Length: 267
Image (cartoon, rainbow, N blue to C red):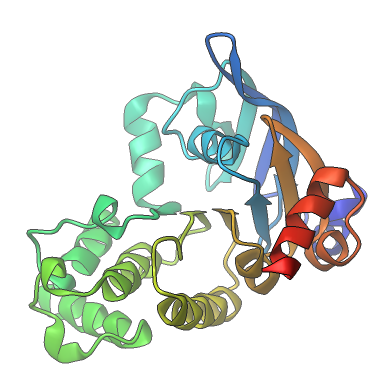
C-alpha cells in the first residue's frame, strides 16, 4: 500500500482497481511504460500531461480498448478479482456495459446519434436487464433532469443538441446504472469556457453525490483540481510525479510538473 492512497485505503478493505507494471509500445515508441497504481472505492484519480505524454494510451489500456504488451489490470468484480487483460472479448464487453462506463471527449463517440435522448439512456438500463418500458422512460427522464436537460427533449435526437448538451446526455447515459468505475477522456475538451465551467460543476456534484470511482485523463489542470483526489503526471509514457492533487499542484517537485503548473499560472 502506498502513501498516496492511504486515505481511501483506510476506508476500504481492498482496491477496486489495481494496475501493475502496465506497458504499451508502438514499435520502438513507448506509449506508456511500467505504470502501477491503485484506485479505491469512491476515489477519483486524475492523469495529466501534454499531447503525446501517454495518458490516452494508458486510459485505453485500462478500459480494454487497447491490449497492453505487459502488465495487469485487476478489477474487483462481483465474483472476485479478475485481470481484465486476460478476459475474453465477450466478458470484457459485459463489464463495459455493467460495472464500467466510458465518457468520451467527443460525445458523438459515446452516443447513438440516430436514437432519441431517452433511448440513449434507456439502452444502458436495458443492458443490465431492465425491461419495463414505463420504468425505463421515467428513469431516463429523471436522469435528463439531473444533467440539466429539459424533460421535454426526451424524444429529441442528440443531433439536435448543442455540444455541451450532447456531453451531458453522454454522462447521463453512462451514470444511469451507477457503474462502479468510470473512465473519462477529456470530458470538457472542445467546449466553450462557460460551457466547460457548467459541465465541471455538474460532474463534481454527481461524483460526490454518487461516490463514484473514476479515472480522468485531461490536459486541463483546472479539471483535476476540481474533480480528482489524487493526481499522476505523465511525460514520455512515464509517470514523473504522483500524489494528492492539491499537494502536486501547489508544490510540484518534478521540473516537468513545475512547467505545467507555471504555464497555467502565466495564461
